[in-house]
Length: 177
Image 1 (cartoon, one colour):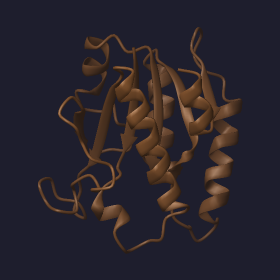
Image 2: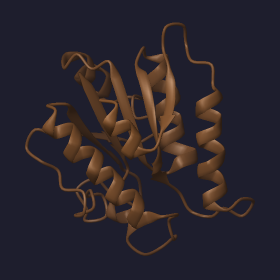
Image 3: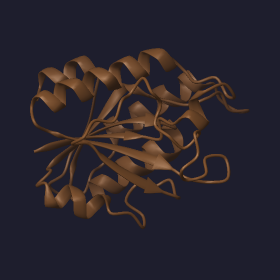
């Protein structure tokens, strides 16, 4: 079984505030991935970050309405960049027998990157959805450059023995299921 991890696509980070690179395109592609994978019976996992800007239970903490959470989806709450750190994510994925994780969301250089690396270290094969993660401009680098850089890093990263990190556009990844 596969799982799609949709990381931190919450109102606090996507409504107003910092503009996000290709925000609407990323939302469309994550929605496509979720629909495709649900039809196959794969697991969809929404990961929510809680901090002072997105207090647990607040409107800002909720997943954006453009990515509806369905009854068989899993919600995992975290307080660190690593979606596995001090959460039930690993046990939930293992209970479902997940082997390959498809990953996208926000923010490329923080929670998405950390979770991709951690997933490989936890024994999963990883597919980074190259066009389904986003971030904002930083003082030293534009958001599009950050996305491009991380796609290159993930594609060239040495994964733990027996594991793979692959980088595919969402449309390609969904045809390979």
